[in-house]
Length: 147
Image 1 (cartoon, rainbow, N blue to C red):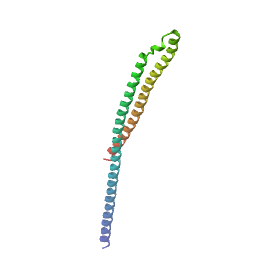
Image 2 (spheres, rainbow, N blue to C red):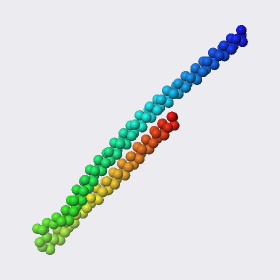
Image 3 (spheres, one colour):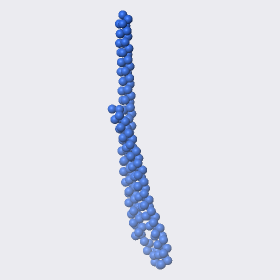
């Protein structure tokens, strides 16, 4: 009978150990499901943010380009906006040339400043978009690893 008890006892131990193993597998599956859910949520959020960033970039760029067009038009108008009342005599013309040049320079500087602002904005947005895409790729890769 001692052999029988020992065999029964070993069977029970194996059965309990098997249950522990099944329990551990169940926990691992739950953990995997939780990870997947969390990472999918993060991925979805990042994808939405990327779409929003691209929309924002397009809207802002449209506004900045409209402003640039207006500044270019103002610049072009400065070249033909000659005050004929100020060019009558040589002294008046000399003084007006200085004012005329300043007005044109300000208009040209405004165009250049807007062009530079557009370039800087695009550079910053492109960097942010690339960073967001890296985050998306990161979560996509993590999800692939636990499938």
